[in-house]
Length: 278
Image 1 (cartoon, rainbow, N blue to C red):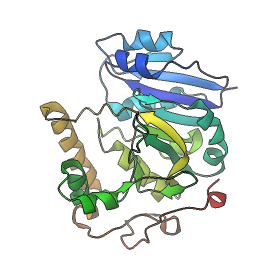
Image 2: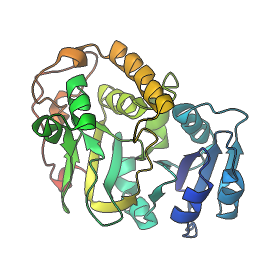
Image 3: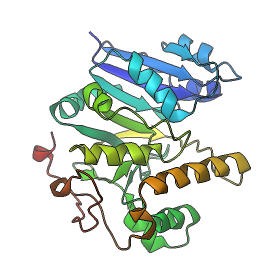
Image 4: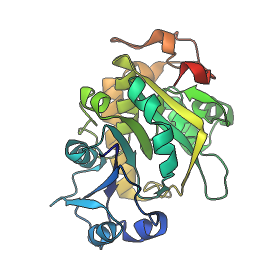
């Protein structure tokens, strides 16, 4: 019986797979790699490591490739995991009841290789906050935007980064999967906000820590990634125009889940008692 399906999207990721995917797959877990027409040996390497590989004829983007994996998945629970993440398979089974008992998207707390925390939970994606975070222009504004969790802590977030997203297959399919209008970037914020609007929740669990080496395409000054991110930003903020002008520290709370428009006066949640979240 397949309990978990891990979906990874690759694009020229052969070396990254060799570095991060050395553990054998445990019983009850299938790994589907959707290869976005890589020019290297990503598909062959993934297959040698135990993955079921779906090769696409063209690079269809991150969201579309994730949806290919979601459609092929046999597990009740889905883990979307980037190739540059070291999966702690024990965490999957530990989080299974939380994933299946409520409509939620969950991420473990991601760390760098040295154990320092990565902010894979985020606050409201107000445009000025995102600019401040990326450029380092305002530490205060960025600090209110970045969400970290301690051990024993679960924190709600407006959105979680696409490096690791866990959820039930039923809830993810109810949401319609990932929004394929986004080739790359902002698709994770879009998915998380749709989860809130559907009556679910989005959270980061500090008891589970996975290493993520963060091989971000847009690091440094490279024209193509910058243009891709700009294109996705235009699409995202055209769908969420209130986030262009919103001010202050705002987040969704579990008491103000959305049915339609943004609730800009939602009280910012900080810590969730574990007995209420699992």
